[in-house]
Length: 476
Ligand code: ADP
Ligand code: MG
Ligand code: ZN
Image 1 (cartoon, rainbow, N blue to C red):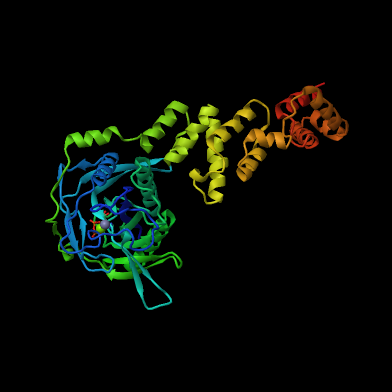
Image 2 (cartoon, rainbow, N blue to C red):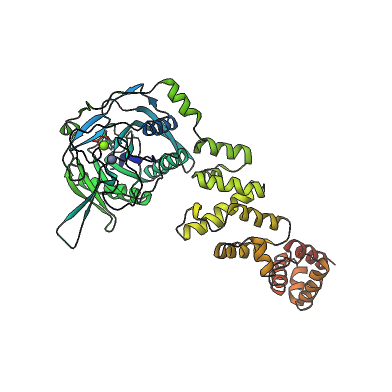
């Protein structure tokens, strides 16, 4: 029996507003507990919420970027439940009438395009944060996060594998970052994802019962958790059992999911329209004004990179995966306008280095104009490719400019033909056997000669000139 997994993701993105959604407390992360609070976000009796306009603007930005239909009138609702991190006893969210619906994004994986439907985007407030002290029988609550604005982006159950889920999530992440509406920090929880997972026989039209997975705080964990859960459900079905609808917690240390509660249904929350908030009206004019401020989005930027710079789509995809990488690449081009060469160095050397050190491009030890300058020096034959690699590594370690490193280390390439010729003659003089081999048709010994010359010059000879002189001498 062949199975297929069916996956729908619910993504919560914390919006980068200065103040909370219904009061003017700060949203800044990391302040001492309970210092960013007021009667409104503490849920005191008699207070009234006032909607932050920026929150709506950011939700509209996301709705446009994900091809949603924006509701001209949406509503806030109360989702009622008790938990110690929710002082009002209800969360203000949107239910029957969300701000946006019926969108999609296109993802690409190994050259295959796929459209993933977005069911809805709604606006809601975050809850507080509980910490459980392992050494004392107490739990602590911090209300700094209550009332921080969120948008929830709910996908259709269109996703069919852990890798597809990863691709969808990375794409959404890149969109919120391009839009500058969310800082995307998964560890601090400003970009969080719950995954709904079920299995069915391949080709079936009827979905199985889903489990909702929580605590997925990195792209890798989302994929691993979905993979584990799919296998778990398959085993249940193969054993003749039945999957039950429940909420499960991913344990990153053990790489398993465990049940935390059977799944509640929407009616359990007794949703009803919040009588303290007016319907939210968004007119065409407002949407048009927001549209006019949208930056170039990842898909459009990728297409432009292919068109304008003649880059392979793969390169363009990697380079536009984040706004910062794309900006870095374009900044390098300002100094050295050779797109494919710059792309090779950014994707290969730079991203490789950053990955190895777990850094993102904003923390690159090498600024874009310095990388451009390095490639320019190589292009002008001041240094050769091998030296460029050495200089690159030193730049990464010291943060110095390529010119400084070249000067300090005396790394200037030898391009003086007569100097190179003398060394070539020396090498040939002590290699009669290899010359013999060469004359007998083993032309690949040329590599041996080049290697010897490079060794004698400590890698500083211009390889092009070395090759020319060698061929010249060997042909007589
Ligand atoms: P809830 O609030 O109960 O989690 P939502 O409507 O907010 O419900 O989200 C449901 C999510 O579950 C959506 O992303 C949807 O695509 C997904 N989903 C629904 N049915 C299935 C299923 N059988 N298998 C996997 N995912 C599903
Ligand atoms: Mg939900
Ligand atoms: Zn407040």
